[in-house]
Image 1: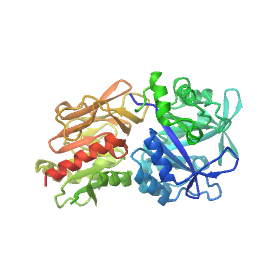
Image 2: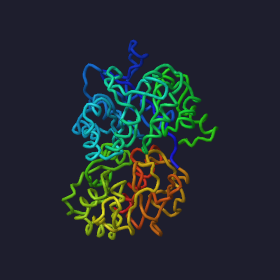
Image 3: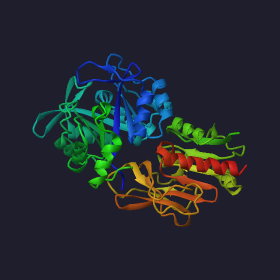
Image 4: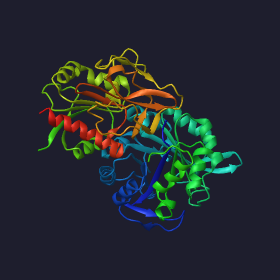
Length: 251
Length: 205
């Protein structure tokens, strides 16, 4: 089988890791290389670097990606501001293993096909940010949750996977930063829509929430940030919790 | 003294990570273009993540050389698409011949849950494997693929199961080896595999 993955997300602005609550103040939280290597040592299965410098609308600088990639021996995914295949090739050349597309894919879905054809499906993660509109209905938003697109989450996930996305990263904007747990109904909706792996995001607060994302939500991987950043727990501690409950994880 | 390893880059792949991994294992990396097959390397890595047709097509002009080098004892390691290209053919690209250095035809994974993406275990590790020397049974390594090697018979060095389907995740015949997983991003186990490869290159000097 394949182990369920625990993915740690680092938000990056101006080449530094930042943390903060949603729409709140951002605080400098240090050097990306140092934070990423700490998380690898503490049992993370993968690192996501997310450029949240909204003003620039450009991907992370290759130097930042290169220095983090050189220091890691686990997979690295880079997201934020990516729209062209040339940018993706630059990021992969700098050492990213995968890239995550979001607004760039919504603006022109054929970009998914082009990037997957050139770089392989396994290199393409489609990130989908959604808000719940009514019970059982979620709409997709672009530009960091700012713009509604009218798309329904299951349909967009399916289209993305058919076009060549090798994984769907689904984020509940409603839950993001709340620590109330992942939106399990949302995960089940996406699970029922695509054959590719699903990475759950938005709302992780503790190990039981991650357990439920796997067992009830059907996620293949869980992304978390705040619960690790504030030192409440570590990826390794969460994995022991999961392993004790019969979830296969990489030790 | 560091030993040099030539890496043949088939289209697409995260070669930065591979280079770093080989350097950490004690090698100096030289890139080799797919249209340059003269000059015997000390060690050769065939890497890439593209479709079988692309990888095999890029490597096939080198088939005779690669076969000859393997016969002369040059350690050769195929990774992911570079591993699959070592077989005779693949369901992924009908009509395209592979290098045929390992027998059989690469097939699509049976489960509709594709790709197989993430950390899975190495099982049934062959005791006399040089590539997997001191890799404990059950070690986790990182996979990202939708096609799989055929049952390997004598050349299988390890197996991995995904959703009930067991396939060779490493193959070996003399100095010729290949792995379906990505050792360059497989944590300490992957680093061990790359060190074993570089150690064999050093030993063949």
